[in-house]
Amino acid sequence: MHPGHHHHHPPPDITGLDTLSAEVFSAFRRAMHLNRQLLGRMMAEHGDHPGAAGVLRALADRDGISQRDLAVVLHLSRPTVTTMLQRLEQNGLIERWDDEVDQRLTRIRLTEKGRRQSETVKESFVTYIDDTFGSMTESDRRELARLLNVLADNTAAALARLEAPAPSGDND
Image (spheres, rainbow, N blue to C red):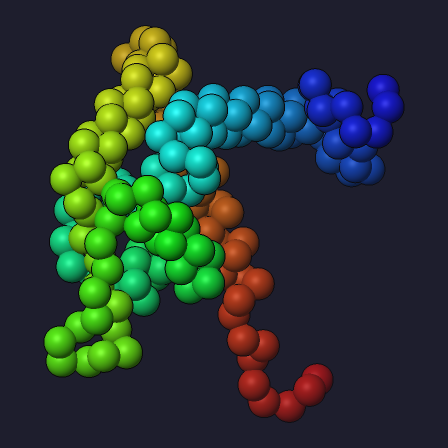
């Protein structure tokens, strides 16, 4: 196995980690990796930037949203959003204008062409879900949803512990 080859990940070699947990992590990482590839490839057909599809989807039901709020909705930095919007505007998919009241705000909406593109993106996304999760049995889907929620809860709890301020008081 040469570095740089990411075909299948060996379980991480962590002393004190039980084999089963390592196997689960390996399967999870493989599924995440393949899903990102598939989704990325499907979305790349709808814009030269993988994130452009997400922007179109977000704008579909948020006519006139400010550029600042869009960045918040998408969990992206403002400069990243600005760059993506410039490209979408050049391709005639969105239009931008300065807010009448607060000139510091730039508002955005999809053009007719942008709306059609966003519909296409939605159809691709539905296909992606159907091809991946949709082909599992109902009981497998229920079980997977349950397990992923347990994983998400554990992960959120670990994040909260990291973000919690150190207890104030005497350093004892």
